[in-house]
Amino acid sequence: MSLKVVLAEDDPDIQLVARLSLKRAGFQVVLATNGREALERVTSEMPDVALLDWMMPELDGVEVCRRLKADPATAAVPVIFLTARSQEQELKTGLSIGAIGYITKPFDALTLGDRVRELLGV
Image (tube, rainbow, N blue to C red; front, top):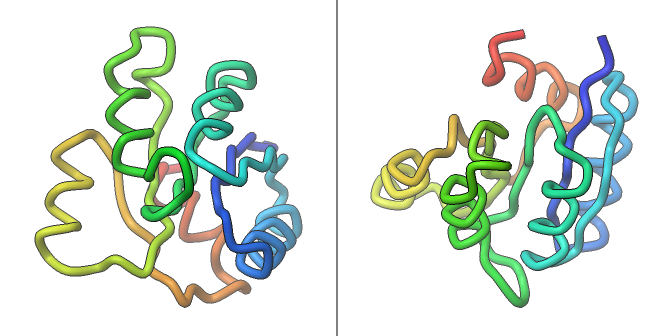
């Protein structure tokens, strides 16, 4: 089963590694380089999951998650944070606004797809 993911990441190197890793794992990847693009892509693509960087230009991942969860059209799209921000309070914040989990940077490119599937329960 091919799952569609919106990957929102502003760092080109991390974006490249994550995109290649997810494609290798069988995901269809739609890219966004900032928070506004992430909102647009999720709304237009209706992916199986949104993988959001915490710190992005224009809108950060937290605000993107809040807006996705507040919109009935996108509220059901699972959100996973892909971030270096891994303090306990940040984890609690992300989960409290509707994220289903976290993948911390640096991540293992060989297991990124497996980790996303694990968080999705598929």
